[in-house]
Image (cartoon, rainbow, N blue to C red; front, side):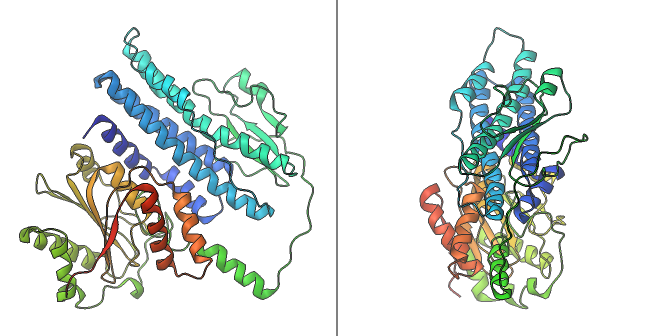
Length: 453
C-alpha cells in the first residue's frame, strides 16, 4: 500500500467514525441541513486532512507526501462540493428556484503550491508540518467559501434577495471587522479571505431569518427580512403526491461510510429483515460461491463466513463487515455495529486497511433490504484498496463490485436514483439503473452473482 493509499484509508476511517460529521451527514440526507452544517463539515474535514498529512510528513519521502496532499485535497473538493450541492438543491426547491447548483472549479494551482511547499527541504520539518496542517485546512475551507460566493451571486442575479454572511468567534481583530451580512455581489474585498487557523463561518441566505448556526456560541445581528411570497397551496392529493416524491428521494439511500439506510438511524428489528428459513442451506444459495473463486477451499470459507453473517444479522437492519486477506489467509470481522445500515470501522478493521496492500482484501457486508452496492460501497472499495467486494442481501441476493476509477460524488448517485424513481421505477430498479449509468462514467463493474442452483 502506497503512502497515498494509506492516508486515504486513514481519512476515510476517521471521518466515518467522527460523530460530528456523521450527525451532519444525517441532516443532509434527511433534507434538514443548512449551509452552516456544510461549513462545519468542511472545517472538520480540513482539520482532519491537515492533521493526517502533518503526522505522516516526518517519515515520508518529499514527493510521496506531495502526491498524497494532491490526491487528498482533490478528493476533499469533490466531497465538500457534493454535500453543499445537496443542501443547495433542497433550498432551491423550497424557494421554487429552477436553478442548478454551481460547482466551483477545482483550484489546481493553489493545491499545487501547498503540495510543493511540503517538499521544501530548506525549512525545518516542523515548519513543513505546520504548512501541511494549516494550509491544507485553509484550502479545504476555501472550497466551501467559493461555493457560497458563486451560488449566492447566481441567485442574486436571478432576482432573489441574497445576503452573504460571515460569522466568527472573534479569533482576531481582522476577522471581527469582516463579521456581518452583505448583499451578494457587493461584499468587501477580503470577505472570503482567511488566515491560518481561521474558524469563521461563511454562508449565504435567502430566507426571512438567518439559518440556525451549529457549533457557534455567539449571537449575531439578525439579517433584514426578505420579502415574503404568497405560499403555494396544493390539494390533498397533490400534497400527498409531492410528499411521496420528496421522501422517496431519501428512502433506502446509503451513506458514504458503507451501505444501508439513512445514516445514524438506530438499528431496528423487523421480520422484513429476516433471512428466509433454510435459504442459506439451499443449493441455489450455496452455488453462488462457486462463481467467486475457482478454489474449492475458498468457496467453502466464503460460504461459511457469509452464512455466519446472515445468521447474526437476520431480523435487524444492522450491518457486519468482513475482510478476507488473500495474501495472509486471515479474516477480520466487524460485528458490533449498532446503527442502521452502517458497519462499525473497528480498530481491527482499520488496522487491516492500513497494513494490507492494494488488491489483497476481499470485502463482504450484508444489505438487509437486498439492495445492490451503493456509491458509498464503491468509494470504500477505491479508498480501502479492495480486490473485490460483495454485498449480501438478506433475501439471498449477492452482488459483486469493483472499485471505480475515481470517487463518485454521492449527490450524482442520489440524483440519478431520484430521477428514475420520478419515472415510477421502484427503489431497487432505480438503484440498478443508476449503477448502469455510473459504471460507464466511473469505470467500475458490478453484477449479481446468480449461481446455478
